[in-house]
Length: 75
Image (tube, rainbow, N blue to C red; front, side):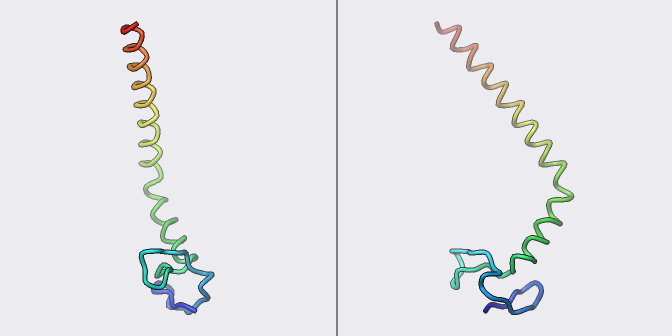
């Protein structure tokens, strides 16, 4: 049994994600609380993350094009 610092409830260890950095090997927040925190963070950041992914995809295509052109010129 472990106490969640977020909801203040005592729950079985199966309700906590593992964390090798902690002395007991489990995170301080239960899975339900951790998921709620992550969900609330993702909502406002979702558009920003999608934009970043699209920009990275464009960058990779551009880099591939540059590499292919460079290789063609070298031959």
